[in-house]
Length: 286
Ligand code: ATR
Image (tube, rainbow, N blue to C red; front, side, top):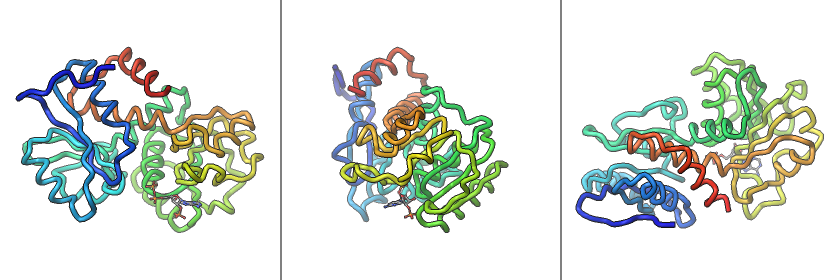
C-alpha cells in the first residue's frame, strides 16, 4: 500500500505526541488515508519526554503543525495549553486530538466517538439498555460519558477502588440525566441486569493475558454483549469467557481505528468515504 506520495513545500504536517509511542498504528492509518483521499499531508510520531510537553506544543504551533494526536501520558496534561475544548472533551476532561486554529490548538476527544462508532458498526445499541462499565480511570471516563449521552436505561460503574467508581458516577450524573450506580469489583449489585458490559481496565492487557476483572463465567449469562477496550491481545480472557457464555464480543481495535478516522475528518473537514474506511479496516485487521 502506498503511503505518502510526495513531500513538498505545501505539505501539511500532522503528528502524534506521547511517550512511549513506538508501537503506534496511527502513522500508517493517517498516511494511508491521506494517500486515499489525495491530501498533501504527512503524519509523524513525536516521542515527547515528560517535562517536555509545553515546549513541544509551543514548538509544534510555531512550526505550523496543523494537528496532533495526543496519547498516554498526556491526554489530560495537555488541556491547560489549549485554546478551547470541543464536544466530548469537555465532559471527559481528556483530549486525544488537537486542531490548529488562529487562537491556538483546539482539543477534541475522538476516543469517545471512536468507541461509539465501533459499537454502531457492531450493531450494539445503548439506547434503553443497562450498561455496566468496569474501571474508573481515563478510559472508563470516556466510556461512561459517551454511553450516558446515548440514552441508556441505567449505568453501573464498578471498579477495584470503589471510591473512584463513586466519583465517576457523580461526574456522569452531573452531565447527564441518567441513573448511575457504582460499586466495587468484588461486590456490586447482582440484581442489576446487564445488557452491555464494557471492560476499560488494563487487566488482561499483554503480557498479563491470563487475567480478567470478571472471574466467574456465570456473570455473563443474560449479558447481550461484552466489549473490551483492549486490542492486544485481540481476545482477552474477559472476551473469551463472554464468548463461551454466548455473548456478542467486540475488542478495542474498532475504537482505535475509528478515533483515527474521526481525527482525520476533523483535521480535513471531510467525511472519509466508506469504501476507504472498509478497505483500510480490512488491511489493518489482518
Ligand atoms: P486508563 O486511562 O487507561 O483508564 P488509569 O486511569 O490508570 O488508566 O485507570 C486504570 C484502571 O484499571 C482503573 O480503573 C484501575 O483500578 P483502580 O482505580 O482500582 O486503580 C484498573 N486496574 C488496574 N489494574 C487493575 C487490577 N489489577 N485489578 C483491577 N483493576 C485494575
